[in-house]
Amino acid sequence: MMTWALRVSWALVLGGLTLGLTLRLPHRWRWGLIWTVMVWTLLGGEWSPAYGLGLAFGSPSLMAAVLCAVVLLRSWRGQPVGWMNSSAGGRATLILGGIGVVLGWVLLVDTLALWPPSVYAWGFGFAALAGVALLVLVMWMAGADHPAGQRAIGLVALVLVLYVATRLPTGNVWDALLDPWLWVVLQISALAKSINWIQLIKHK
Image (cartoon, rainbow, N blue to C red; front, side):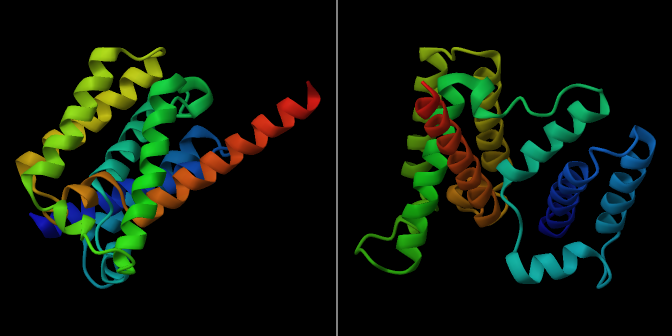
């Protein structure tokens, strides 16, 4: 299951990356390339991109795979793919993105052993999973101020359900919710949003 999960998750992530790089191409050419990359990744073997990427980076997080799957599905249906953008998602998406950025820094500091508690090790226990589930429940009950925010909360809940059912990718809840590449994307998005806010404030 882990072997196929590695291939499927990388196929979704590479498919999403291909989509982002080919948005200017006609629909037929764009999806021809996307399907080619995804099938090539799923085939496995040493020539598959999943082989080298798996050796170098392990498996993407469930969150990254689910996000790419949703973006690909929306693009296939001809729907806009930027609904996770914080400018459209309202407070819920901003909060979730901010939590992801902070969690990434906490795990990085933990990896460097700069404080006594092992935060990463907590991810193997029930307490971390219960804490994340409680946070999602509180945000859901509080209500999102935009449909995109509701979808974002729903995706986190879906990832938690998949994690509980499969324990993928490593049996650690932090690895299910975040990976280094997704963390980098979140930080770039946060930086771009901060620059936009600064420019708006200057113009005012």
